[in-house]
Length: 598
Image (cartoon, rainbow, N blue to C red; front, side, top):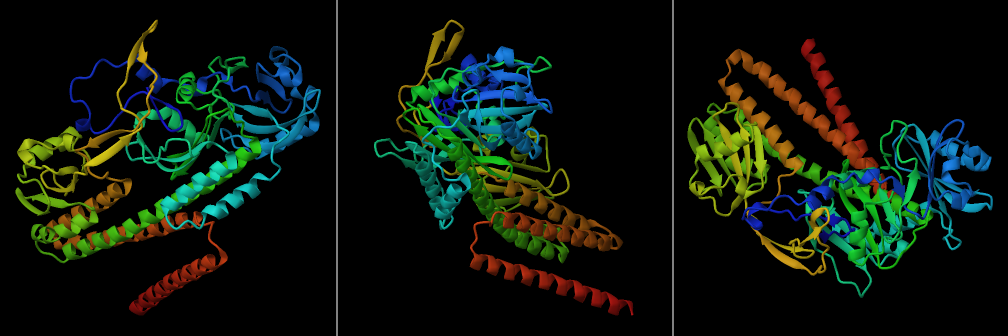
């Protein structure tokens, strides 16, 4: 098994089909399937650097407790169950927990409630609280004497100030990695970005001088399986202070309904044994990850490694969490800005195409004249129009255009009105003579026989994998499993047969273009009395597009909290100008309507 930059097991390597071994593959290995399906949120245990107590309010009845709770309260977990926690913890500490619960949303990540003296010896502890499954879950960590006293918000603000002035994305991510390493003291801190196919790549790195660089290395999508990515979305921060730990069971091991305990939201949750094994195998004794979330999806991670066990105090983790939220906002704002820029340009082109087609008498001739503009709209290298049983094309297209072959691909996808792929193996055949092309997008024009096809060039890429993507298998008592890797040296592979990926923005743009072309075609074929209604419908759709753009701009403003006063003032002036222009247009429209009525 390979390893990823945060230590997750890598059950398999995926990539373009023609870049890997084309020979028949062996039957699926049980170890791979187990990695992909492992219910990592049902571990039933916590890490031993903390304690867990789950209670029911308002009487604080204990329903679950970690088996090590006697180290703190000097009462065995089995005896604590069913008792009121108020008999073992001071009222002032419980009030801190209750105040936090009053603001907590069910199933939200744990919130740091503060500190309190707990147990017969008054041990100073940090408290984390969250609500799930009708219980209040209290996670307790003894506060080390050497913990720094700076408030997490102040530390995070200082970190944010040091990265906010970054001029470009690369500089920003590098500064972010450096700041997290400065805060936590880990040997290595990486910014790990997920690609469109869920493979990952290290795009920034801060490390000790004697460590080999991971910058630029790529990891297949299977390195971080779907259930792990889902947990990274729910828990923004995950820490393993000592990969050599022995898990502490939670008692009882089932909930009130008899089902295994769901520890998805628990900061102390014990991680997969496979994950721990591979941390050890790669020489990592402690790790931490901070999720980077953009648009509700897991954009990437700030992944941290250390060669020795390394506790990270709750205050430092809170600062890291706040900093991670800022990084997520900046990433989301940058993505939104790029999306808006592409949207604006594509909208201008679509409006131009729609306007010209609306004045045309011959749809085929007019659309043929606009093929170059349509290529620009969809950021492609060639476009081919199949309309009325004839081909027209512009730019780079297959040397032998064959509608039968292309429609076979569309048919395999269920004949949607819009289909796309970035892999040549999905559609390219010898009959098409399409060497050098890989990306294909098909848009239906309103009838089953009429289609617009756009093509993107193949992008030959030299990929630097973190180790050769070959798996050694070993026999065990339970069958066969993947053997731990011994070499993590860089392994290069040249990947053929893929274009740049079609993004969600490309899909949305193609969908809008589909509507424009379908409606203009219908307009030209419609009776004269129906054309007025269709024109009004077009204007209403244009108005909805403008409203969508304004809403997206509103979302973009949410990510601009880092602006200084001068920048904020300029932004306010531009918003005021936009408001004035809109009011002027509305007033002019009202005046025109009144004049027409009189």
